[in-house]
Image (cartoon, rainbow, N blue to C red; front, side, top):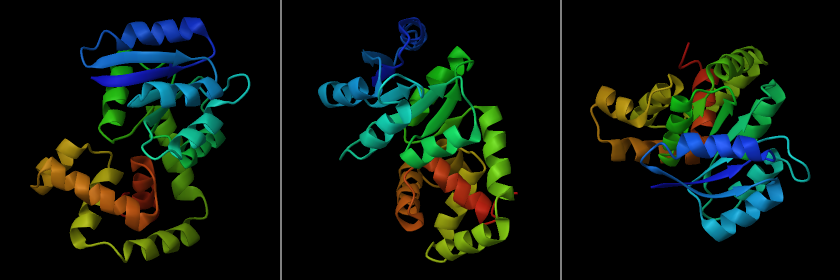
Length: 217
């Protein structure tokens, strides 16, 4: 079961999320929180695997809570769920350690899928957020960023570079394993090495590194 924590200051939103997620046989809602401080406390008490986190809440907001939670020894995966889709929020959330960023008009199917992907160490972004992210990555100081990204790639093995490209293309671990003829466990091992060598904390940042290095068009 994917133990999931819902964090939103609106009880009606939490009720809707609970209704959707509990329709999945492998998702268990272990608790709810109405602000960032409650979320941090709930993580210590309930040990969730995945958190669906709102951004704008009274008191400690979702971004600050995400940053605090991701500093824990064994932090849960955090998926930001919000009505706000500004570039600033996307990048701040990813820098804080979130592994996904979904808008609240995301379909129930994609909401459940996001929880599963997050639990499996993968990431999911709303399509419109992905387009903005790619545009900003590929247009913001491209020469300097590409030079820096290529320098980081010098430490990678050939196989790690292949996995990096596949992650940049948005492929899942299962798809990468099939395409590169390796086990999913091996894929996960390569991705773990990418985290260390590229000095990143989540899969989205790995994909950004692939774009910046020019491995993905």
